[in-house]
Length: 486
Image 1 (tube, rainbow, N blue to C red):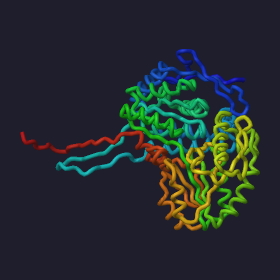
Image 2: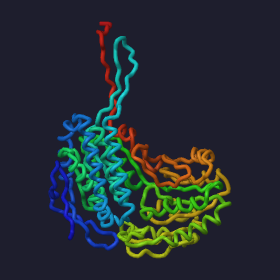
Image 3: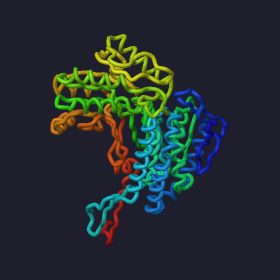
Image 4: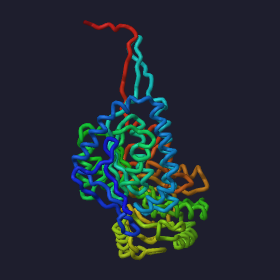
C-alpha cells in the first residue's frame, strides 16, 4: 500500500496549497513507495510564518525543558530501528546495517544536541571602564532554512535540524526529493512525539522540478536568518550564492574527492578491509567515500591482488537481503551516470581490475580501476557510487601531491602502523577531516564536521554547530555611574 504524506506546517499535516503531489520511488524495484505533497512558494511562506511565530516562545523555553525533548527524541529514534530499516530500503535502497547505523548515530546527534542546550555558552570579558562587567553571550538567530540529503537520510536529516534547534532557533527543512520521509518527515515525527512544540520544526516536500524555486523562496525570505545545506558541490554553490546575496550565514557540507593513503608501513590485510569499507559502504554514496586509493609502491602488488579479490566477492543487489553489501544506487539514472564515468575512463586508457560493465537497473557492480588518465572525467569528478581508482606512489611527497590534486577537501584516511609517520603526512593533506590508521568515512556528533575549498565551509557537530547557528552578542553592565565630558 502506497504511503501518503503531506507537508508539516505549524504542527499540522497539510496538503500543498495547489493540491499537487510527487511520487517517491523505490530505487530497486522502480515502484511507487510513497506520495508526498509538492509544495509551492505559498507553502514555503506558510512554513516560515509558522516558524517565525514559534521562535520567541521556543527561544525562551527553559534549557532543561528543551534538553528533555531531545533526550526523549533520541530514545524514540533508537526504538524505531526496524521501521527505519524498511523505510530506508524502500526510499533510498539502503541496506539493513546502514539503516541501523543511521538510527544509532542520529540518536546520538540528538543526545549531543541535548548536552549542548545546557552547556556553558558565553564568556566574561575584560572591560575598559572602571566597575563595568563585559559579557559575550550566544543568542539564537531566528528561523533557519535547512536542506537535508537522501544518502544518509536519518543521520543528515537529524543533523540538519538538531544544532539549530538546540541553539534556540526554529527551522524550515526542505528534504531531498529522493528520500523526503526518511530525511525530513520521519525526523519531524520523532521530535513531535518527543514534545517539540508546534511550528518549531516545519517540513516542506516538493516536486523535483520545483526544487530551485522552493530553495530560492526559502532562502530569500527576510525572516530566515541562516542556512545549512548538505549535498553536492554543484548545488551547494547555488545555495551558498543565494545565502550570500541575502547576507545570511551558511554552513555548507559538500562533496569530496577523498583519498585513502596506504603508507609503506601499513598492515596490508587491515588496509584492504579498511579501504573496502571506505569505498563500498552504502554503495559509495557517502560524501566521505574513498574515490582514490593511493598505495605505496612496495605494497601495491599485494594490496591490489587482495583488494580486487575482496571486491569481486561483495554481494550486490536487493537491499532487503541481509547478505547484500552493495545495494542499489538512489536511482537507475544515478547508476547510469556512474557507468558513463567508468566507460569514459576505460575508453581513455584505464584498466578494469574488478567489476565494470553496465548496471542492472539501479545496481552498479563494485568496480576497481587503475591507470585512469587525467583526461578522464573520473579523474576529478566525485563518483558517488561503488567505484574507486587504485594508484601507487614512490614516496610521501608524491602521495601528498596526489591527495591534494583536487579542488575538494573533505576527508582523508591514512593507513599506517606508525602514528608519527601518519601524523606527519596528515598535516600536509588539505582536508577538513583526516583519520590516521583509519579510512575516510567517520562521523561523531561531538566532533567538528566539514570541509575546505570546494567541499564547503562551516562546521556541524559539538560546540561548533551551536556557534554556527547563533550570534555572539556583546553586553556590558556598569556597576557605577560613568563620567562624560559634557
